[in-house]
Amino acid sequence: MHLTPFIAVNAISFGISPAELVARLGPPDRIERNNVALTAHDYGHSVYRFQDGGRLEEVTQRAPVLHLGALAIPFAALNGFVGAQDDDAFERAGFVVSPRFGFAFVPAEPDWVTALARHCIATWRAL
View 1 (tube, helix red, strand yellow):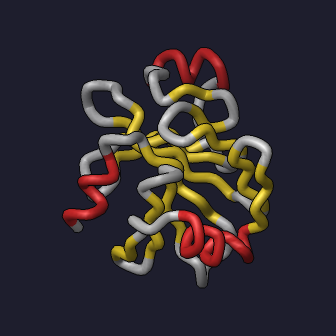
View 2 (cartoon, one colour):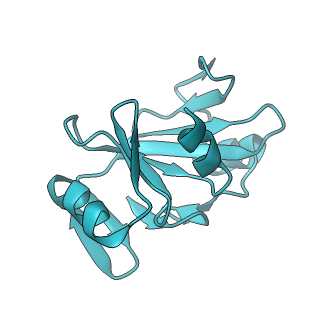
């Protein structure tokens, strides 16, 4: 995963609409509404979650290595990296959330990382 925090994931902007995403990637394998009222476009390799108004909230994908600019952090080192680099990091529902870098992950699970839009951090804090 190549993440520009709060801006883009793998060159797909957080400003993309659902229609633009489909035009760019083709139809998803499935579209479903999750339990927090987001519509998920599931492509198998990535899941894009949108608010009803079309605003992209989260992008989840496998990330054996997370690329942040020139940094390449293996998933196994991600928890230590966040602990050392983000004093505002916190845990919610088993996830480590990094407000500085705009992502969440479960350290004990396989290498799925969720990139977050900036406005989502407050929602995660409130959980």
